[in-house]
Structures are given as structure tokens and as C-alpha cells.
Image: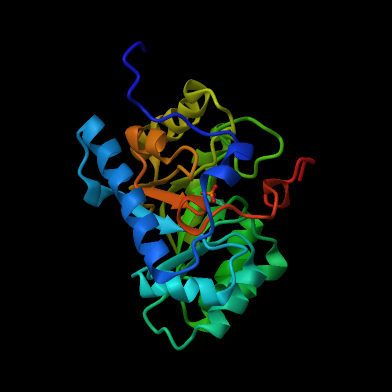
Length: 267
Ligand SMILES: *Cc1c(COP(=O)(O)O)cnc(C)c1O
């Protein structure tokens, strides 16, 4: 493309200079407004309504006091990568009765009981073992959970998620889990400064969703596409994201390296 007014993704190491720590309610108001303005512009570029895109603030590594500032700036939904960390924050913030939690990171079956207890949404479903563990725990809690199936669209061994070719068969198994409400698909794009490489991952998820819609059971919802993070959410919106998971552009850069969340070793 010659007239490139689409978003450029950032390299991970660029982010620390770019995103100072949010440390007050005003900082959060400012950052949230800035991200919302960018969401609006991305929507306008492709003729989408901004109401179609939910901003999910990702609060991992940030302490409770900072989350409370974000809450005071009107955040009512936080996404966390690690179940224990999320559970601890949920316990500490139960006074905020309208606050909801999304777990966006890979889950081990022994942590399913935590997620079943407090989460509204789980975005990284990638195995039947995890589905079974969640179902059992949710039944015990008398709760249900919105879930997204995570797809590995970059082909990198370090990324979690099902291979695209595995997703159709996986979805066919999910109606058996009555406590799981399937909402859609989730992915992480390749981390690259080349927009077109990043965009390919998002296109793959959208096209996969269109194909799956023809052949999945009616009880399986595929309306949602969770894709896009601080460095690439505008590209994701251009390609159809309905949920963008934005951490550092709202909260400030993280000290924890991303390798903590996306192991460089094969899982
Ligand atoms: C941390 C995280 C994000 C947000 O990343 P930022 O670079 O902080 O925007 C999105 N999705 C998942 C699964 C994450 O773990």
C-alpha cells in the first residue's frame, strides 16, 4: 500500500519509552480517552461502528492501588494473564461489586478452580482437558463462564493456542460443556514491526471464523474476535476485532518481560 494511513505496530522494546506509568485517576482518564480516540479512528478508516469494539484493559503486574485508580476512571472490566494474580486482586477488590474479570492467559488444569470461582470470561481456551476442568469446577460453583478459543495464527511454537486446522473439531466438542458459553476466537499476532506480517495473523483469524460459522453447532457463538494489543490494536480493528486487549497503552510499560507470558520454549 502506498497511502499507508493504517497503524504501524511497535516493536516490544520501543514500548518502555512510549508508555509512562499511569499513576493517578487523571492519567487513566487521559490514557483511556487517547486509546478510545485511536479505536474510533481505526473504526472510521474501515467504516465500522466503534460500539462494535470493546476495550479490555489488561492490568497484569500492576498493583491493586493502581487498579483502583483505573476503576475510578471508569474501568469496570480488567484482564489478567495469570490466574493466581487475578484471583488475589479479585479477593482484594470485592468491595467493588460491579467489577468483572477476564483471564486472558494460558490455563493449567490445576488452576481451573480459581478461574471458575471469580472470572466472567476466559479468553485462552485451547484444550479439552481445560474445558473439562473448568466445567467441573463451574458446576460446583453454580457459575458459567464466557470463553474464547485461542488460535495460534502466527505458527510460532512459543504461542499458545490451537492450530487453525484443529479449531473446527474442537468447537464441535464444546456444546457438551454447558457451563461454558462460547463467544468467539482469540489470538496474539506475531510480534513484528512489519504491519503486513501482523495483519496476516488477524486476517487468518477473521477468515477462519467466517468458515467455521458455516459448520459449527448453533449453540457455539462465534461473534467475537479478540485480537490486538497496545502495539497492534488498530490493525486488529481494521481486520474485524470486537475485543482489543490493551495493557501498556493504558497502564504504562511493564517491567516484566513478555517472555514470562509467552515462553520461548515449546510449551
Ligand atoms: C499482556 C497481554 C495483553 C496486553 O499487552 P500490552 O502490550 O500490554 O497491550 C494482551 N493479551 C494478552 C494475552 C496478554 O497477556
